[in-house]
Every structure is written in structure tokens, then in C-alpha cells.
Length: 259
Image (cartoon, rainbow, N blue to C red; front, side, top):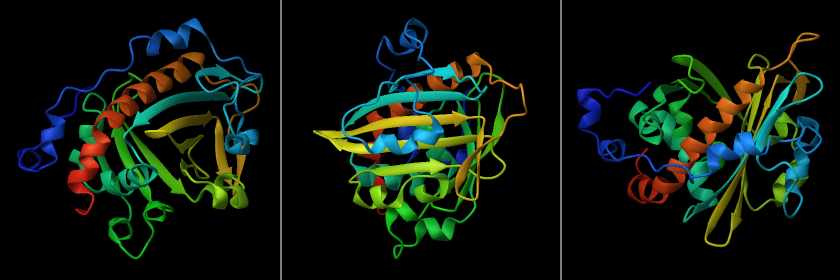
């Protein structure tokens, strides 16, 4: 469902990016989802999230599967040339402050957004990556082809969803993660620098919520996440982050000091 913009939004400097054609994913991206399904034994389960700190790559960097316990894992791997770790953290502090910023990211599916604590997002005394911690973005999007849905995204300090704080303190990348006691999905964007940019290693652990700083299964006994849901989530992730990779260096250069 394409986003609409108001007359006021058309007068914003961000609107120029909304007018651009979105950068399409690599030609084979969607076909890979069907051609080479992720095997459950290769997936990075939520209990093994700290394996993402290991050097190199894990067996399940791309694809989606339903686990024997009914939960699902969605994994994407995308290189983002010209993007820095700082830019990625800045994006999550910045884009929730105005709906046009969310819309320009993916004008096909991103419809509206409102953040719970705009003052924290704008506070220069807080390190950039911490500005979105413990804030909630209420995003309206159509990412599963079922029509618009409001999705509350509760951003967290990585320790508070189960990442090892000592390994995180030594990490030269960033982890943008979300989860709480209500949402039945834990989101993780694990970003590390590579030559010429960064690489994004996304994981969605579907069917889990966060309770007391740890993942807890959110499904009833016998319930299973439909396999098609994971595929739609992965398609959307590929689409939105391909476009973000293309525009973020320019958006950051123009707006980095404009909160």
C-alpha cells in the first residue's frame, strides 16, 4: 500500500528523497528465499544470539525457517557500501521524529510513525546509539500484504534482550534491537564494519517476547508460525534495507545535525 504525503510534508527538505524511485534489491534476492530454504539446524536461534559476535559468518546468514518448537527465524545479510556504524545508529534516532522520514525509507509500505520520547532522540548529551534505547516507535506499515498495521517497536539496550554486555562493550559495530513483554517477535539488526562500509546481519525471532531481560517463548503449546509469514518478513526486510543502503549516506550528510 503506497504511502501518501501531506501538503506540509511536500514542503520539507526530506521530500526530495521520497520522490526518488526506490533502489531495487539485487536481481536474485527474492528467488533465493525459495531456492535455498534455511535449515532449522543452521539458523541462529534466539538462545544463540551471542554467536553473532563470533568472527566470520554463521551457517544461517540468509533465509527463513520454522523451528521444531513452532517459532520462526528470519535472517538477512546485506552489505551497505558507504554506510558507517554511526550513520546506522543515527538513522534509528532520527527517522522516527517525522513521518516523512519513515515514508522515504520505503514509500511502498511505510505509512506513518510516531515515537514515544522525541526529547530523548534529540538530546545531544546522550550518545547516538543510546538515544533510541527504551523508546517506542509506533509504526504503521503494510509489510505482510494484509493491509496497514500499527506495530509498536520497543528499542532496547542489547543486554536487555539477552546479549552479553561484555562482548557488546568490545564490539566495534552496533546492535539495534527491539522486544518487550507484549510483542511476540524479537528484532535484531547486528551491524559491523567492513571494508568500504558496513554489513547488516538481521535476525527476527518470531514467537518470542522479552521478559526480565531474556527471551521467552510466546506461543501456545502446539502453535506454529506459518512459513509464509517468515518469507514475507524477509522480502520486506530485503526491500527496505536495500533502499536504505542506497540513500543513507546522502541523507546523513544533509540532515545529520537536523533533529
